[in-house]
Image 1: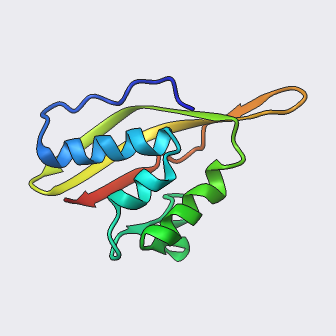
Image 2: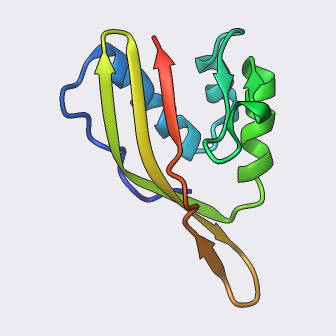
Image 3: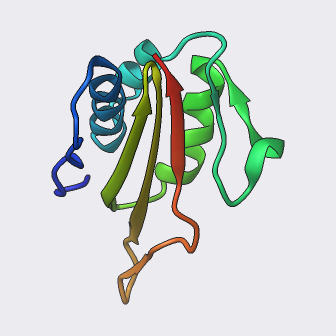
Length: 119
């Protein structure tokens, strides 16, 4: 679980707060909370793999997220850029993933994930 605080929003708005709560929920691995925050038309994909691996809807998005995150012993994120234009919010950040192993291990993926949300 991440020990990093939620990235600050330079100009908080209802839209940016929704996205910030989503990140908090994701990094707490609160899968029920993630599903509750998504709509049937929500779409998620990882930046490195693009839309060909997109998942749509709460159940498919939870499964896609868990595919990458369930095997981790922990992960951290930050710092973030949050840009909002009315109800459209885009975030960009870096994640560091941690695995349990004999020698331990961590990696920061080369592409920063980003998210876009229409609240």
